[in-house]
Image (tube, rainbow, N blue to C red; front, side):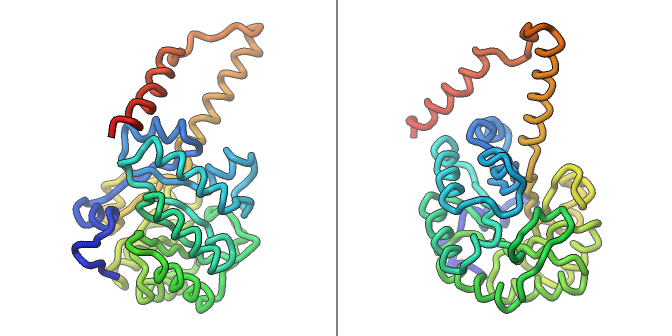
Length: 280
């Protein structure tokens, strides 16, 4: 779907103006503040949020009201960044999906990802995923597209067979989706096949240890990818760092290590968040 030139979405404009855009997945506002120092694209990752907010796996526990509240807090400290939000299946019902989309757009979100899984849902990089009937998903997608004003809408498929991925991607594009994400793909030939079949932007999901190999931005851009969302770099880095600190404490009779980050360093980041929030 092409927007009128005077109503183009910020993410649509960015896609047109850049070769490829990385979005860094965050798990809380603090990690968003750090990631925001290096990247202007922030991904509100369902996997990371489920782990951080609930301490549970990404299998459908997220409540739509919780994700909206979280996004609002991130937007408060990163008002000028592009926020891309994973809304899973729109939280089951089309009416709920439309409400969530309208709420996120009013906050100032740049884009959302809506998937074609049915419940019980799974992380896109694990086995056992179930797909909605295509017509049922298209009904939900169409309602979302008619609800948004200029919110960049990515339609995600969790299909695993190439023919079905292409069938669904073409249907998403025909319905008016702004971009397509095929999740959990095992190599870039899927991207190259999609690029031959549809003209709208393609999205690639990077997650350490997932079904998809790790590629750099140059490789992905060459294959035809326009947007890359990194689901869990902040979450996994935090897990490793906390594990290391806890092991050190237990092994050294509770003695603090000479960590590279001190209270001064942390306060500098927090003070910057406060200063930037009220300086615009």
